[in-house]
Length: 363
Ligand code: ATP
Image (cartoon, rainbow, N blue to C red; front, side, top):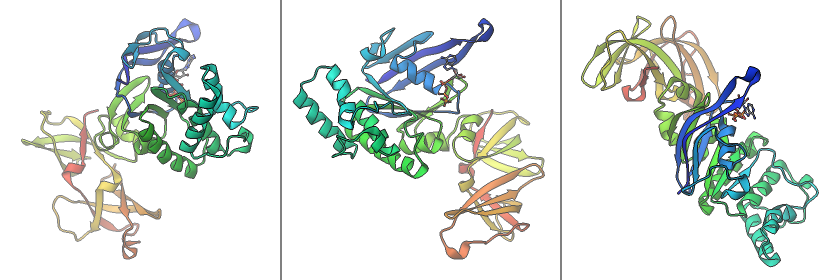
């Protein structure tokens, strides 16, 4: 059943009585059991969207459905959802067990059942035996697990998570990402996860909704969002990307020929009608380009000059100038020791990108 947002907008009263539109006409269908992330830069309206689903804010327009039911003006505690915040919000004077028990006692569950539930959920979050500790005696990652346990134990249909790993260091965050994803699959609860970290969203989500300036720009699986961004903004926000701007010079049946900087001819698969001289953007991911020696004889490869070489362990990052105005970033995996330091600054090289790895965008 999941969660549906239908034409949801939210405006806040701003200064000089001008309304500020924080969320604009969002439409979303999140399926039951799905791990769905809202991804976007700071201030794009992710948290506001989540808070409306939770019931902490009411939409100015539109309706939110959870498990098929319109939420209207229902307060948070009458919605089948639970929220995990970034700052954990654990009670410092209560033990781990008491923190988790709190909501269950409010629901007037029998004591023995509460104890069983706590044991179960602590096992799930790998904190068995920590019942009697206080939050201050736990690491950040452990506190985060308690916060999660406290929400999971209530068995909500939907769990809302607002940057829950934001306070953790990188290594722990990566570990928790995988654990959280695994846990979500185990319990089968719908997760709606807010993050501004594109790698986190790609790692964990079944689907991602990319937001900017109060709007959802694209919804898709991690592969779709990364490989087939529908706009300049999404291409740029998700991962590293090269954007070459050019003009259409020729249209064939299933291909376009684009001229970049009056110098570089690029062939891309494209089957819709465009006009000659129309401006287009070509999106090329750094790992999709391959470098060859200047002598490499392939008419579809491009001649360039290496401007910078940066060794980053797993791969080497090359900046290659293709035209007066265009430099392209290329990542080459360092699989063989012998391939390291292959190309040097100032050296001429050929750059090859297979046509189906180039994505054409009109915006
Ligand atoms: P972040 O990642 O920084 O938390 P976000 O994408 O979650 O950003 P929101 O917190 O949803 O963004 O905020 C969206 C916009 O709405 C921001 O410009 C913010 O200043 C504004 N805003 C949020 N809450 C209120 C409020 N209660 N009153 C007025 N403006 C608000």
